[in-house]
Image 1: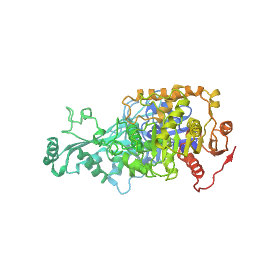
Image 2 (image 1 turned 30 degrees about the vertical axis):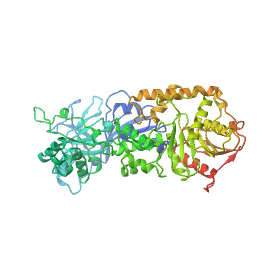
Image 3 (image 1 turned 90 degrees about the vertical axis):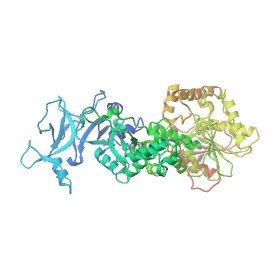
Image 4 (image 1 turned 180 degrees about the horizontal axis):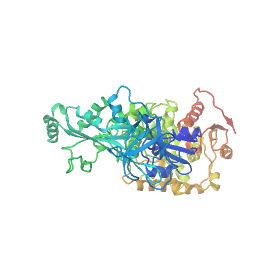
Length: 621
């Protein structure tokens, strides 16, 4: 959605608060008027998204033909945002239980009236009579709608939301009666009591169910705890109850009403007044539904890291179910976005629902069928696709030092060619990085020769990865090897860096904040990021003493045109003796790994390798 808004230069948008909070930082750059509503908007969301635009919050219900109040432009003052005041022709009443207006600042239930009011619920006369009541403040026959929302008037005449007067909650825009979920749980023969509550901040609120098992099920649990499988009928264990109940609920309720966690308790805690003691309920443990199986390859390792990041967990196993660990449709959209950003792979929410485990999703994303063998996503040689009997394609890391962004290229390249990435050394904090770019080039050539002893060698790279690929191609030639293909993705020779201000450590840290996951490699993520930043800062410093050699042959050059900075192809004239075949790619420099640019780039690469594909627009220099 954020990408579409920016591409279409949308200026006015209405987006729910939980969706706004999930957008990547810097989104909505063209939006000047932003409306939100459907749930309470946190002050931190207002602070992040109100700057530089007019942002308002709306309140309304289906029963009142949507919008009935609107706020003034919101300010980042750290205060709870009001839902505004009634719109034209809408009327709002804040009443006590005797339908009397309450004073300013005193909470009461909100009733609304006006020409937008619905007539009632079709075929549900009882509910209609309960919610659509006579309006004592208007003429005979006029009605008002009892919203169930508790609000209070401010001295300025605005309304501030305080909560609900009934057992109804709103999660991700859905109104949910907690009693309905509890009733569905009680239809299961193993549940004696059930309580459903909400957990987490408003932007990522989840349902959590607490159940007291029946005596029979409790005895089974005791048998399982004894360590004697024979004591447990049908081999059932305590851990299976949550899975059974979630499956049971899915047969009766829509997905948004299925709790993200089910916790078995001995008894429902009560206050001295015999009411539910919410503070005495144990915190839900989403990790209790983990399988713990370790990832088998780097693709699974990276996805485990992304699953854990989006779900807010320390770790996730390869066979763990995204939705079983508390995921929902909104978090699935975040997962899809993070996969695209970190790995350059396009997927969909539907695919996450169809393949909800790391292993299943990794298999789906590996459309070529060649699973990477290495389980270390920081390995010096990253196997991206190992199947195929032709000479491999070698992708050299860009400025980040990692080749994860090239994972999306594998399915777009010939199926009969393996694909590998060459990654920077030093991310483990133990291996010493090369002391110069020349030493790095030599080291990378040796890494390739250890996998592929003979040419032809096909080398490609984005940004500084192309700079290194070019130097490696020249080194292969110096050693008497054949270079079959050299691909430069918006890359520059060393002369460019003489007048280039390298990125500061804070900029590199910000990049890693968006693109780097520890993937279980480091217990201390901050220390891990510190190490990564030091590695890349070292690379930028070493460029000062490096001179690009001369490569004897042709090259493919892919020019990122979206920023209008012109092409760097001519800078290579003194370093490439053959033709530089130039392809214009509608992309920014940093986005050339994303699916659409990757499609264009791979078509040209496939053509250069000798396969027949539709011709691309190319010019030589």
